[in-house]
Image (tube, rainbow, N blue to C red; front, side, top):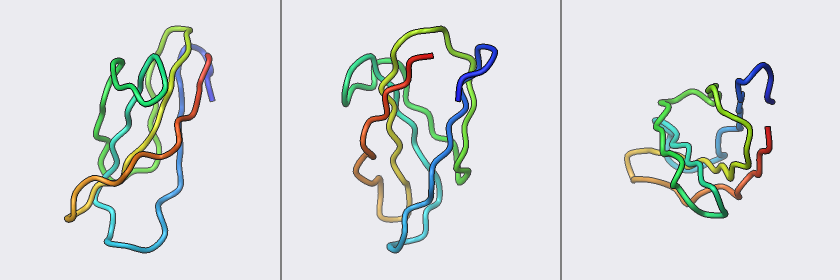
Length: 79
């Protein structure tokens, strides 16, 4: 959701496996890229940020005691 210059993201927690201790959001200017940012957001499943218009490829990874998960499928956002 993009409203008044603010991008609002939400996602579902993964099912099964070790308990999630946090999430890492990755944003890029193309598929599988992280050139626009990598942010650890803790255990919440929501995130908001002010972003300019453009095209963003966003994915999320779960973090736990075993390490970092594989990334989710890229979501393309064009605010």
